[in-house]
Length: 291
Image (cartoon, rainbow, N blue to C red; front, top):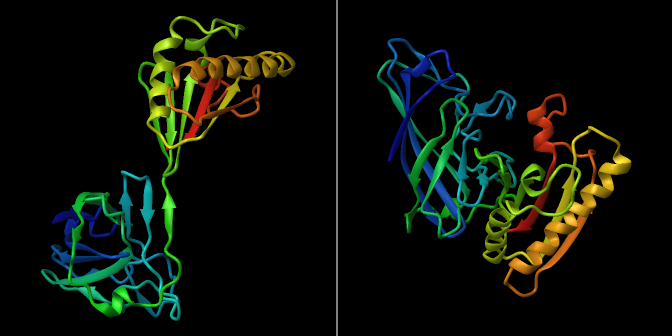
């Protein structure tokens, strides 16, 4: 299904990782993979995919592998058995090694991605992310795995930051929330809180995104760089947040949406104030809402 070579081991790219299957059944997904030693000497593989000494040096597991659901900004960690407190997965002796040309297979169980997710990336400690791995449904997963007594699934939020090359906005996204950082230099003249004509296209795009979301509360926060005095910057950032609110109220067409505003002056920078580029990023109005 997918292949990668190691990038951060003594053997460089001589260890090959093949993803054999990723099967989803109900709330469980099982990854099966194979490691092949393409080196001309023995390869130590005892801790290849393990978190550091998690199980006291007795055995190793692939508990360092995770599934990346990029569509929902989620990282799925292996399921952990309730009683033994180890991952629901293969185990192998801590002294294991592979002779040249040898391989071994292993598996690990994860909380399944949502049914509408057809592919994920595989993250391992020793390879680049393996992208585009398809998720198969209806796989013949052993009932001992699907019915195992496990702890609550660990599914972590992934935060993504996207910078707009045109400089009018940046965005941060997690599994549940979007924050759009709108450049104050595009929205307003210097030291002013009245929106410029250039602000319309940007705010229309934001309004369309809000209309397409499930959000009922939109938070609008004004921010400034650290030049000047916050006795001026705080009320200015409040007024700018209010101006954006009023414009979005007229642009958002969906009912049941409320707006909250606040001004923070220079207290919450997202970049260094020691450069003009950083100060420009800090002069912003941030619009945050649930997806």
